[in-house]
Image (cartoon, rainbow over all chains, first blue to last red; front, side):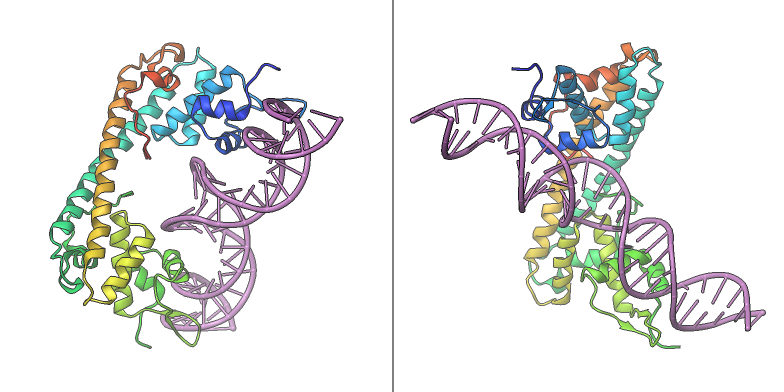
Length: 145
Length: 145
DNA sequence: GTTGCTCCTCCAGTGGCTAGAGGTTGTAGC
DNA sequence: GCTACAACCTCTAGCCACTGGAGGAGCAAC
């Protein structure tokens, strides 16, 4: 038994799926790995930690490019953390904007659903409100999703 | 001057970009259009309305498949509107879930940013919290973005 | 007639994976 | 040692909803 974990085990431990791990390696988010004689990837604990870091950051909605920067920072702990701070702050702002936007959206959808006559489409507010944007209270130039 | 609008004008009026309009036609969201002798697309008012409908629905975060269904419903006003109602309700639920998830996310990011020592990475909470998921208060299996 | 704008088609790329084909390696049981 | 089977490998294509660019044609004004 050589020391190092197989990709499946690394996936289990980190919570990142096997094909996703390979994908991260491909785009250079993970350094090139050791392989066994049989060409299988070997993961050390540090690699699993790195994967967990990435997964957590993805859950928090950071883009892979931002994560790349955060990983570089993590690799050099003596650097000032202003960059990490800025990335987190930007993400926080983004999340807050999104929440505001979604709340407007919620209200608009609520209005649609409440207005539904449960009858025919011709008297249905859902369709009507969609058709007539001018009536809409949701006027952001947003990424609504 | 033939009656009908050029694609650029339809884009202006509907708020949908020119390549996006062509894309919608390609995937069958708009019916096949009239063309001029010179092979240019011609848009009637009804087409522009349809585009505006799509745009509005996209702003509200409906997927193109849902929009396809909504458009079918709009085309047949004598149908019961239960389907439209269901689509809108599902979207409303989705938005509410997302808001909850984003609020948890906001709190987590807030905690990260507040914990930043504005010093070196080695003492930075931002990196630390990312590295240590177990400390995280944000435990949804979410689509965080 | 020529400038310059809009339009046409077709193809490639985005982000962040996910799925599948087709082949190899490793392991457990007999 | 043999066989079955899981887990691995690479490579390619697909997902959504666009977006951008190349290279060419049409059209209006001067």
